[in-house]
Length: 221
Image 1 (cartoon, rainbow, N blue to C red):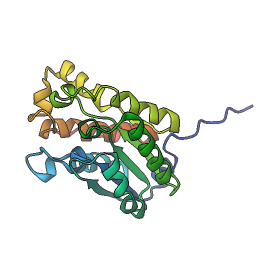
Image 2 (tube, helix red, strand yellow; image 1 turned 30 degrees about the vertical axis):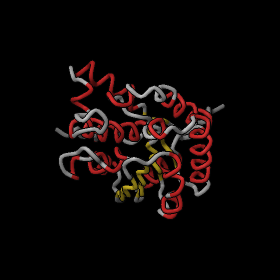
Image 3 (tube, rainbow, N blue to C red; image 1 turned 120 degrees about the vertical axis):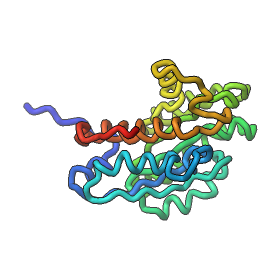
Image 4 (cartoon, rainbow, N blue to C red; image 1 turned 180 degrees about the vertical axis):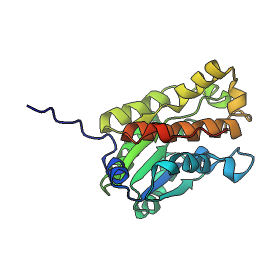
């Protein structure tokens, strides 16, 4: 009797990569997705991510940046029709950083985010989440702590993989001898170094989740 292979975590993306087809990725979120804090646009998260992932997509990679700084769950909900119209194979959903500042109740944040994720999944797109950043201003926000586990709880409930940016940023500080300010110079937004580490790490994470040939991954300087 032959064991049945496990279903892919990102089935649409995995299938398209295996077939050598083109891939459309929508990056949906707030200031990190927009790239606020980078010294120039090419050093922001989206361009770094695109350059890192492109070698694994021989059929061609299209990355649509739908990041607007300051957006929380309500603003992202209001912009959801544009995201659905993208017809993306994968929607990377960066979330949970601005709602604590806006005074949004955790339950309301979870309910709205959950509904919008389900609406996006209904289009046939794969989904992946990116949790909040590790930075001084969020650490000083009394309402912030439960939002990181809330993002992971949504992911677990809906079977959506979550890139743990908060934990990764802490580990980069420990492993590379960095401070929070090295990654987020203004205390909130990531700078060039933070975006470089994040963009490459998210691309490598997707490669791992889809089983693409990891030996082809090139770490930028």
